[in-house]
Length: 238
Image (tube, rainbow, N blue to C red; front, side, top):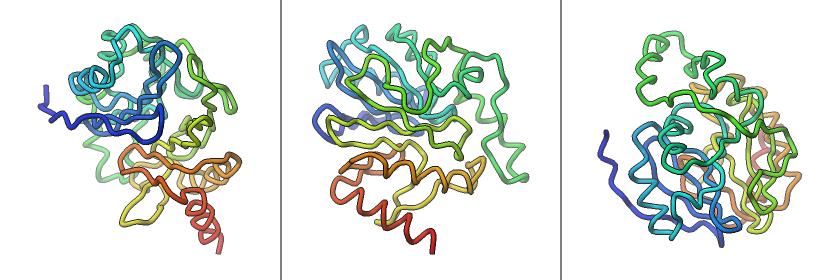
């Protein structure tokens, strides 16, 4: 098991926290009598997630749901160990549920042919098959949450989703966007299945009223986030 330093939870907004796991951040959404976790990091992330939950006062049995933004191993690799630790059910967009269950092979997430040979190495960071209780659709309210809405944003993967936490006006974008050097960027071309579709999908995010953008690999934008996204999408059309 890799030794990941525990850096403590980061509070993004009231009821929304993030934990630094192996590969990607894990978001903790406070819910009635417990919490919902969004993503799991890669395999080997359990001890830092467990420490983060303890710091937030959330017992394993209080985790009501584990939701995945998509099935890449840096977001879903720790799923099996986290399910075993919490006994929580799993939710993911229905197009990727078969991959999580092990009914379908996981597609390569590397676009460059020269890197395809590295794909088997990522298996060591991937999860064992796990049951999916909630196959999600666009517009669904996330089970066990307080009105968190599912926004299907295909492109990075077929089943990529964003989650809108209306009570906090926070939009969790997973890998649908990057935030580097103070600028919004499209998802990494190297790991994105359909870059053109990924760009087109982003327009759906302006259908909701948010003030904060929360990413899986970057610090959040907590001021003027909607304005930044509007400008980014406008510039992208020009």
